[in-house]
Image 1 (spheres, helix red, strand yellow):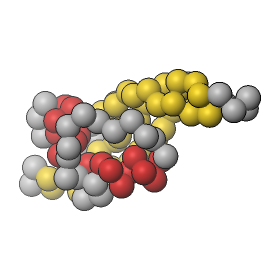
Image 2 (cartoon, helix red, strand yellow):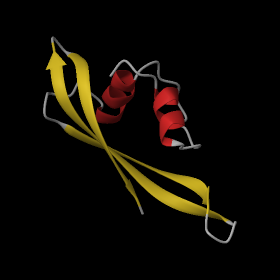
Image 3 (cartoon, rainbow, N blue to C red):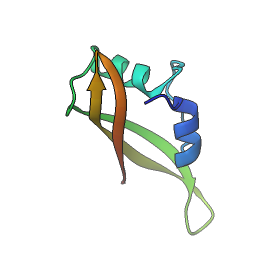
Image 4 (tube, rainbow, N blue to C red):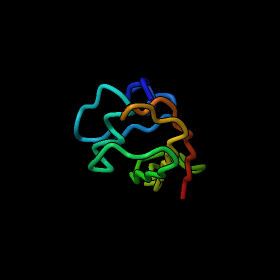
Amino acid sequence: ASLSVEELFDFLQIEKMPKDKYSTIATFLCDIAKKIPQQGAVINYKTVDEVIDDDSKFVEKKITLTFKLTKVEKRRIKEVELTTNYD
């Protein structure tokens, strides 16, 4: 959860970043949830990104990032599990 949002999006090769700047994934998730989430909570973040298709054309692709909070201690997010779904 200490990884930056920018590092995560770079790793996933998602160009369209959230509008707000977040220092960590934890602060990003707290902002989406509008609170400090409990362990076991699942938070979805949906975005659209442009990718190059097989015909070398730019197309929009819907992406859902699903974060499951696997470890929360003393109101701090310590570990998350991430699943990505590309539509």
